[in-house]
Every structure is written in structure tokens, then in C-alpha cells.
Image 1: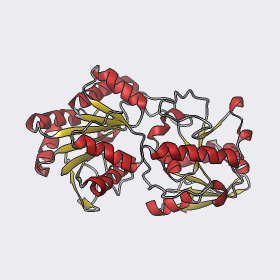
Image 2 (image 1 turned 90 degrees about the vertical axis):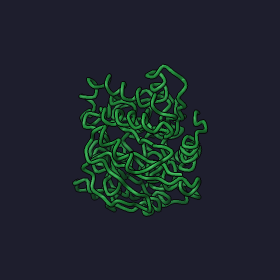
Image 3 (image 1 turned 90 degrees about the horizontal axis):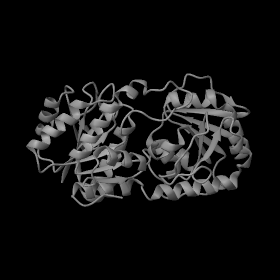
Image 4 (image 1 turned 45 degrees about the vertical axis):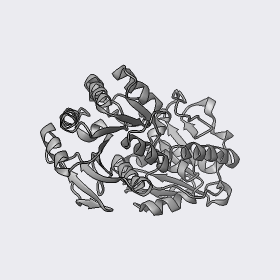
Length: 379
């Protein structure tokens, strides 16, 4: 059985959605004998035409006509899996060419099912403190973005999304219940631990990994929180993993920083497996769509979330402060970090790992396989 996965980019580009799609393709092949042909939606992407045995096609122009002709040229697949994030297919996150092309292709291939993974619905979102808000234009374009999300939902045989709130939005946009929508928080793009050891048996390491910009914000804006976490969890070393931040990193407080640079998936997994805690700068309400939070949870690392303000979190994705992550919030007297210790950290790490297992990579593959085979995916 063949499915076509539409993605913004793939390796060697740094793209979390592309990494997600590639991991999913491997699991679909392994568990369900479903083969994947990738279609890259960025005409400027440059890479090989095959990766890990998966063939890759690419649009040469972002037009509906080019999309239809490219899909037709791939051959008869039983389904299309669209990895949707608006900004990945258009500068202002309004890829009308994409939804128009899929509608035209469906008119020709009524037997080809469309399954859409909504990594986001539309561009407006909560404040990401400490950086320029990226959705200023999206605020004005939100009606068009909502319309595109609505059309994609109606075109789709099944939908998957990472947050319960996104599911509610899609149901509201379409005002119909016929389309099956499953909620599955994202899995780790750097693998998953088979066995997890207690924090007390791990090296006294704090991991900070991700893109250079996000890591720079952590060091520049949350040095006090890093020092506090290291003291409370008896951390003796910080491992910085990822592209160079351009900062002169030697230590935070009295804790030395070891800059490891970019590492392979297996190398990152090995580091996390032996780390006590990991820090990420992310809005807590959106943790279900964070690949970094998923990675920490998958390896039994205690997740520490730093943010510049107290935020409201609805808990609809099953994540709660001080149960599934530790919030180190600036100027928040009601969240005093002095209550944190290694025993509390172990409880949080165990809770996060348990939460993760219900929607790990195998669970995601099962959801998509059911959708591709026309079985229900709603949850």
C-alpha cells in the first residue's frame, strides 16, 4: 500500500515537521507495510530524491496546477497524508494553492483519501515572551487562514492534530461532525527510550537543546532560573546541544557549560538518557505540540519550562504544572522554585514519561494506518 506524504521540507533542511513525517514513514513501513512517497511543497528545497528508501518528488512552483500534475506523476497512491503547517507552504501562512490543488486532485481521484495532520490551525496564538511576536501579520490574515483550515478539514477523510484545542477549533470552523478528528500530541523526533533509569542513577547533567535562537533566549533571559534549577537538582554540568548560539558560553553561575554542537539522533538520545533535567522556553499551553518536550518525556528527563510571565493553562491535553513539568516563572511568587528537589523531579519525570507513552511513535503510526485503511481515528 502506498501513501503520499506532503511536507514543507525534508533533510538536509532543519524542519521539525519534515522530521516528524520521516519518523512516521519509517514506523508505517515497519508496523503496517505502508510505503511512503514524499512530496516536498517548497520549490526552493534542495536535497536527494530518495531518503532511507523513500522516494521524493517536489513541486517546481507553488500553484494548484503544478501540485495536481506532480501528484498525478507520482502514480496511484491510495491516500495522501498532508503534514499541515500554514507557514511551511506560504510566506503569510495562507497556502491557497495547496488547498485548491488538493480539491482539484480529489475531483479527479475520488478514491484517494486525504488525511490531514494539523500541526497548527491558523497563525494567531499566545504571546511567546522574550521574542518579537511572529504572527503580527497573521492577526490580520487569520480569517483567510481559518477558511483554509476549514476547507482542508472538509476535504479530509480523517484529521489528526496535536492539541484538544485545535480539534475544537476545527469542529467549530466546519460546524459538522462527519470528519473524524483524532488528538495525538507529537512524538519525539530524536527517538524513544526502551528503558528509563531513575534520575538519581543518572549523571548530574542539565540538557539544553534545540535551535540556536531558542537556546540563546534561554541563556540570555533565564540565567537565574538555570542556576536555581542546577542547585535544586544537584546539577554539576550543562550540556548545550545544537547549532552554535554565537554566545560565549563557559558557565552559568558556577556550573560549567559544555557546548556539544550538532549531534545525530542516536547521540542526542544517549545524552538525554543520562541527563536528569532539560530546559525549554515554551508556552505551557502548547507543550503537546513541542518536539523538545516530547523528547524530554520520552527519555524520562524532568522537563523544566521557563517563561517570562504566569500563563493560564487549561490542562485539556493532560499536562499540568508541577505534575508533568516544572514551571520556572520570572516574578511569580506563587511558583517559588525552592520547592523543587530531586524527589519531586523524579515524580514529574515519571508522570511525563507515562503521559508520553499513550501517544508515542507507534501509537501515531496506528492512528494514521487506521485512517489510511478507512478505519475510524476519532479520539
